[in-house]
Length: 231
Image (cartoon, rainbow, N blue to C red; front, side, top):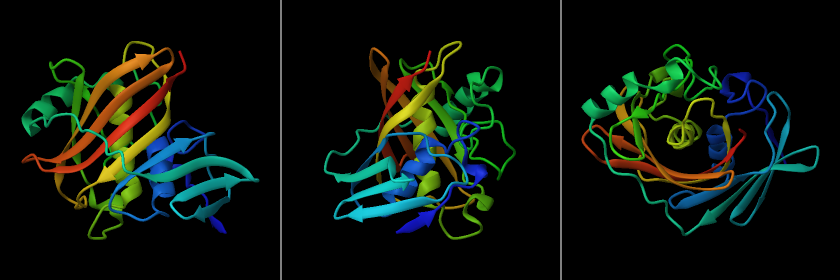
């Protein structure tokens, strides 16, 4: 069936959808409550009509008959990185490398947009080995004043933090696969902590995990990601 097209607002690279956001959209066509694994086969162009194909516990987003994104229900839950306090996350955010050297400065999630125009998840080093963190204010405009932030935005917040866990000068990587389990809704107007952990590297593949916590430590969602280094 014909589904939707991605508005330019939800970009990662300038001409393509943010990987976490489009992963969350693909996942939204499947039964919720457990973990869902999404593989990005090709970049998803902005403003292009996409077809949605759902078969059992698998969903695909296609353009011109080509599969761009594939989502499948999985029983393999992501293991979250540990909780970071709001105070520690605030300090880490102030050292966010993207403030001065950002490979994709207009990214919907981690770019330098105004409040309400982007998620403004800005992960910086915590001082703990392999752990980055950021505060996240779930601005009401992100949900168009609904009572919860749409799952695609939450998936997006669980995406970029896993990339910045591998950040180094001159880095550029694109999301290849993202597995997410959401445990609770994100409430507009509230503050959260987003945490990423570098898990390892296999040649160009960068492995990491992510989590969203309430400021008092309740796990909202967890992710596991594989990124592909472009440099």
